[in-house]
Image 1 (tube, helix red, strand yellow):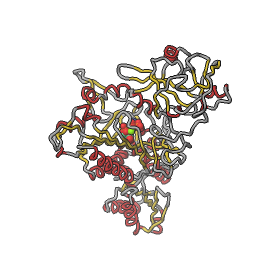
Image 2: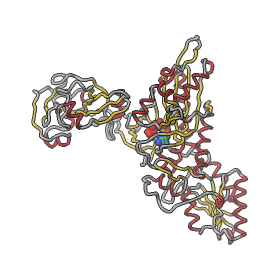
Image 3: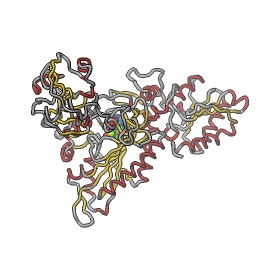
Image 4: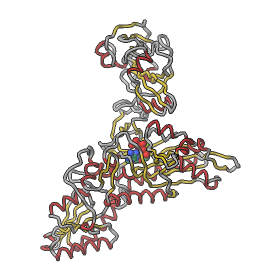
Length: 583
Ligand code: ATP
Ligand code: MG
């Protein structure tokens, strides 16, 4: 293709709202154009990259028996009511909705478990039709709280979503493993360094799930890694070994109550009682668990030096969402100003749970639901009823990891894919059954598997760019090689450039001929920003001594080659790199 005939529009400046590299570079290179918050045009150049990513996904999923389908984006409320997920997505406000002329309400697909379960249930009656893996590459909508970071977090994006249907758990385990391996290959072939982490299943649900993360400082996810122990988990899910408190198992002392005027937080309490370390305190965190038709206030007892993990807490409460209590609610429910809640004399309106870190504590300091007072040398079981215990704490870097006790380190990551063992969550709720070998009806055992196709493109930019611009992996670059004629008015050089371009194309390479009438410096800057993996530079040297320059965008290396060796060299390099990071 000739660049002069393509819609290539580049900019000098970053967009004002761009915070991360991929957003800045993709906007400057004209790959994306913002229409409104979280809504972008994918320019023709980006379309080529998205097509290549999609093709890699197709090849790998077809390779494990996946079959491509297209599912409707408009999904009736009634269908989502059958799985029980309509109120969940209404509570989190994730789903965008619309109505048809008959006033029927639809959600715009944030994901498609209900639709695909309905389809398979209607068309798959016997175990003989199983296993079945279906996938689509289609638009998804999510009303994100904070759309940002260019294509990373948008309201409308391209997702590959796949769904597997098996007769039993063993089948699901095999399918999940096949998808996991396919995901490893997909991300490698897309040129990404991605790794799997243990993850929370969120509103999709199910018994097990793994996220695929691309390490990048701009990543919105925190991942805790126990080195040498094969343990990596999203902080939403991660565990650590608890470092005991000095007060664990201490001989109980008599309860004391002290005036603590306006002393509310753990830090303030530490200043007020310098002899009481934070790990001898119990804070009482109040949260409201929210359902479609009701709310339940929860009190969480947490050791003073630890933090509540809201994802773990939400899962524990079974609520559709959590929210903070208002000051007014705290006063009404505890009888004290905010900052003085505690397990002693707490209203029975609260459901109470204590983190495991509290289990062995004695002689602890806590609130007692009286403004400006705290209790010291409190002993659970003696001074307040023993609550239930659960693991609700946020694991932190530096703490001993769960496997070997090696200290956890933290990395930031971009979630590019997520696989889930759903089990029978959807099939049982929706009555989706097949007939097993013994003639009995059984719910399908399901898995689901997502990849953010448009987010993959942004992640590749985020992970591999440099100060000059994008550095596309060969496998997903809009063009693999650009032939840049720096003297576009010289007939002899035009002929040389066109000859090289044609030979490269004839060798099956995705080549671009940059014949634009730009100054040499501006043209090279543009090509660097656009990020083509190889650039062949035809200039004065070509005329004087018959050489051309080959620039490798990934390594930054420039080689001078005789004209006669160029096509063979570039072809060999591109073909070697086309399979991505795979050997
Ligand atoms: P996140 O935690 O980033 O919000 P998620 O866990 O809600 O993502 P999934 O339901 O697992 O997302 O969706 C599958 C994949 O779709 C994700 O792994 C991610 O790559 C992509 N994705 C999800 N939300 C968005 C979004 N708002 N914009 C772009 N891609 C997204
Ligand atoms: Mg996810």
